[in-house]
Amino acid sequence: MVLSAIFVFKHSAVMGLCEVSELNNGGDDFELGSRLRFVRQNAGLSQRELAKRAGVTNAAISLIENNQSSPSVSSLKKILEVIPMSLTDFFALETPEESRVFFKASELVPLASGPVEFLQVGDMRHHNLQILYERYAPGADTGRSMLQHESEEGGIVVEGAIELTVGERKQILKAGDAYLFDSRQPHRFRNVGSDECVIISACTPPYL
Amino acid sequence: MVLSAIFVFKHSAVMGLCEVSELNNGGDDFELGSRLRFVRQNAGLSQRELAKRAGVTNAAISLIENNQSSPSVSSLKKILEVIPMSLTDFFALETPEESRVFFKASELVPLASGPVEFLQVGDMRHHNLQILYERYAPGADTGRSMLQHESEEGGIVVEGAIELTVGERKQILKAGDAYLFDSRQPHRFRNVGSDECVIISACTPPYL
DNA sequence: AGTATGCGATAAATAAATTTAACACACGGG
DNA sequence: CCCGTGTGTTAAATTTATTTATCGCATACT
Image (cartoon, rainbow over all chains, first blue to last red; front, side):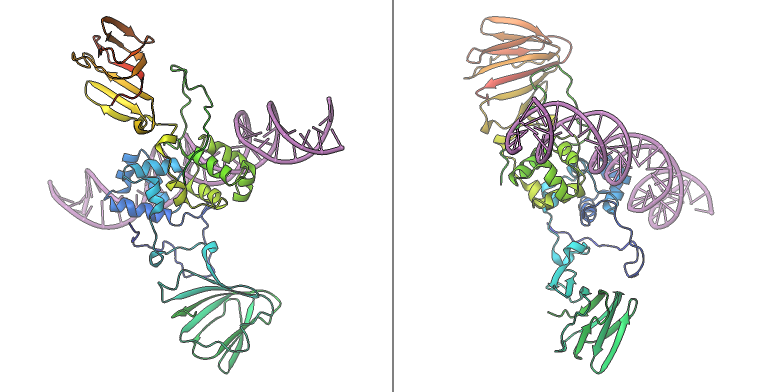
């Protein structure tokens, strides 16, 4: 059995600098809500009906499905019993990589670490778009042997400043500044400042 | 992987008529606590150490292990991450029938239903002792063709009254009364009162 | 002995999950 | 059109999980 629900972003996920409402549950149940919604809809039940049969309230279901609360195991069990589905099966529900939508910071895949650190969102075997969280320590450099690959890439500087060279052009980008270019042009990132630089970037098709 | 912890009864489980402290969590996490204790001890961690590493408190671990609180999924996840063990694996941990110790009322196995209802504790493929919860509607009868099997059985009347015939002897037992006999003697239970009768009984080796 | 440390358990305080009660929206009939 | 019923969401109240702080009990070391 496999998850294949349609996910909707409740708040705009594009506003890079806006406040992100952190979940109050310390852990990462980013999937749990979607899973529950999926199995519920798969069972053809409304939140209210499921709630009534499970002996909980529809509000609880709603909050759980939207990851606004992390159910206690006993509640979850009560709920799943009416599906019916065991906790075992519920947690064993595979979320295939190609349908993953949410990723916790801790789940980002490290592609490079050291003075230059690249953290990738998701598994590129299933995607054509590569999203990276890049951290450059002061002095860090992608190397004088310029990068070149068959992609298009862009990004926005989140913190600090970076010197970007693309072909013949060179510029220092500060927090808020952005870039976008054809990766076949030789390019190079270099943190010439004294503070760490953080960039969120994208690349398609994925590099490496 | 399989559970094989040693279980200890906190309160005497023998006092048939004493108040049983119901868990405050509506569900049935009767296993969860033992499972967590098992995996924790298996990892060679104390409650305090596990708690510290998981970012929760030792008190929480203690309460969870004693089934005095049902953790939220996010808490449980944080805890399992230090073992390390996935939620999937945690819930997939099989509790083999032969090591099951606790059974919720809803888990008792119905052997007979109708005017005479037998609910069995556990799976007799793994046990030599059969515990039954028996309910006799008014007038209910195990039948004039007397029962006979190679066992020893006994029980205590919990509610109502029952007429028990064993061999040539016949008697009416009321709430609190008990019986114990060799099942090779032909026997028969009959509710001759106007109220339902409830009996808790045991049989070894199991009958059917 | 005395004292220190580690263990698990528990009472009271706090944070979070859950309920209660309401809102907003969509759909179908009178 | 208005009303009734269905949906999912959300604020405030309540219940429950979790923390903070403490206890009692071991074991080990002066």
